[in-house]
Length: 167
Image (cartoon, rainbow, N blue to C red; front, side):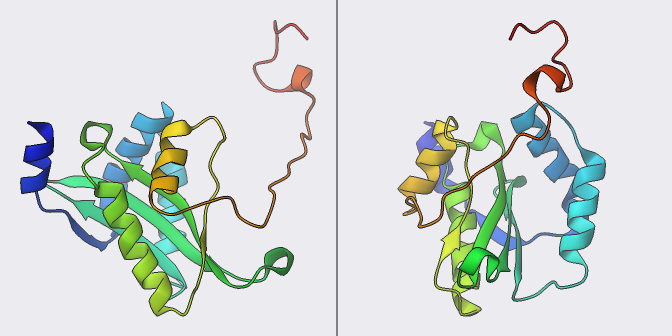
């Protein structure tokens, strides 16, 4: 029944707007367990303000209401990389998963990056986030030519919330 209902529901992908802030905060909060209105207000102010255009992609999906968002931008020449598209945020209402919403957002983002002359899109996903990894892989993403590295600047025993942890 759910698949039939989804097939009948049309997904409209449009530009993200400032008035979408509460919906973005709500969806991100459902995924992360934390509401971050100040963070998202700053991101949207920066993203929808200066530099908006061919180098930035901010999309919203409507399917009987706000159903998801995607943010990406063209990044160039970090560590010898050619200019490429970066997807840095995708969120879909968990009650609407597996309806093609994220894929529709990704398809439109890819189209916009292509129109800007970009030949490759990158993103970063936690290894343990199997649903998100599966989503990107099912949409043609594979391991890239760069390896992400990180350095912990605060020892685990000194990190916030470490009190009472055993080493």
